[in-house]
Image (cartoon, rainbow, N blue to C red; front, side, top):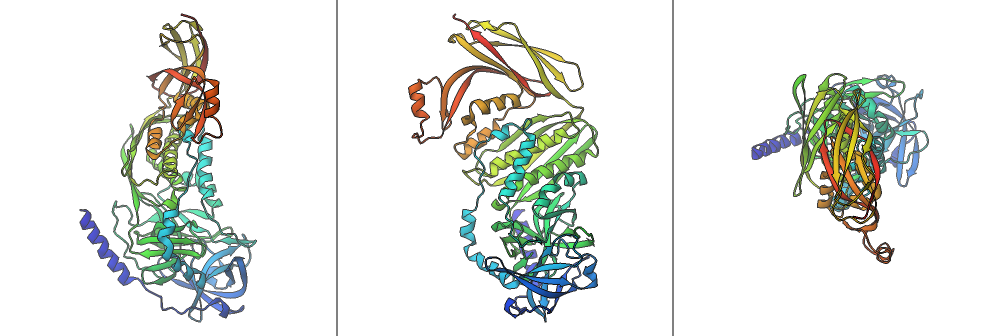
Length: 616
């Protein structure tokens, strides 16, 4: 079957190359020959697939806005663009003077301007991108984005939800390149198309993408639904719409601009960066422009992606370069959702797999999961959700999901479960040890009506002074959301051989216990290699379990993943010395006994009890 699909791919590859208009013989007008007052003609698609021309007048030049990079200033004069002005999605539209290519429309000037002033990236600067292919392999080897190795945030999905969202945004911003532009200039926003997405989901995430220079719009996909969609047979031509594809299938996410220049199977487009990541491997596809929406604030093209047509190789300051017919790497994702009120929904989509996108991929996962579950429910209401599934890795153990989520607010279970997968993928993709290959992601969401959120309200205990071998009885009062308090009784037996002194008994949710352990023994959450990272991610506590611990205060440290407690002060001082080369962290106490009790709710909160152990 795979060989058959490969033959189909190669056949369509041949068709694409044979129907693509190569324009490597198009004459070039260098910047030195361009003069203010010259009349130019641009080419772009405003509706459908027919390329339209629009007229411009060269105004002046902005020299060296960054070293050895210039912008050509021009005023749009044609009636067909005076209404819309410079449009999001026109990035890369080729501009000609006397039939000679001078560059690509790439920049706008301010908001609410009366004159449609644009900036053009000179074609010489775009052609320089082709030279970067000579060192692409070396650059790819050096690429990588690394997060702090501690996985503590992955253990606190419930209590640190806002911090997790902020972390996803900050990681994206830190690894996103924006060109420094002259005052008043704006990089023309790519029309960032979301197909199959609910408006509420887009509104939730729009601020982040707007800050990055993208305009979020709803779009469509024409034929990306198949798990192995054939390569596009739509000809790629200068002035045509081109998408950088992040997600394709039942949901689609892509950034849409315009093709500037084609040389054989090489495509230059956009005239400015996509993400500015350098040597990349991102799917690309032709697009059909459904219509152009005119706005005094920011006009944009509404588009529909075609099937994937190749791979973007370069993402540079002056544009992108893609290879037509090269099959990109994609991660298959299957998501199933079921509730008592409807048949099982199944979503299949493919996500771009590239190191350059590792900082953005967790946010994409968060958006797609949130959107899929919200759309499947077809309405608001109180639900709780059980998530099961895995992220399958090549040559390593799978990342396993098996947890329960509920909340007091409508849709909180969706947000919590989606965050869980997103933050897991963040630590998985941005670790300092290895860049894993994700084979596929398979997730199952099972929802029930109502909210099974609950808080541990009080804990009563029968005695605070015990001898070794005795048991303490705990009466735990749990308040489910909008329901009466329920009592559970549990006992914890002290070991027979305990030194006299004060000890702690912790009663709490998985979230409560994890937060305390991160504070008391942070070294436990520092992975020392990639398999250990996988182990830590798979050991996270469950939300629908009650945890009871007996803990002993101690002075100790961790070195690597080993804990050393009850050390003499002299030894502890040496091990925590700055001269010690191994990674180390203080330990303030250690667990001696732990009991785990399944419950019917997603628990939050807990209590810390102090007891005294007497001489036996």
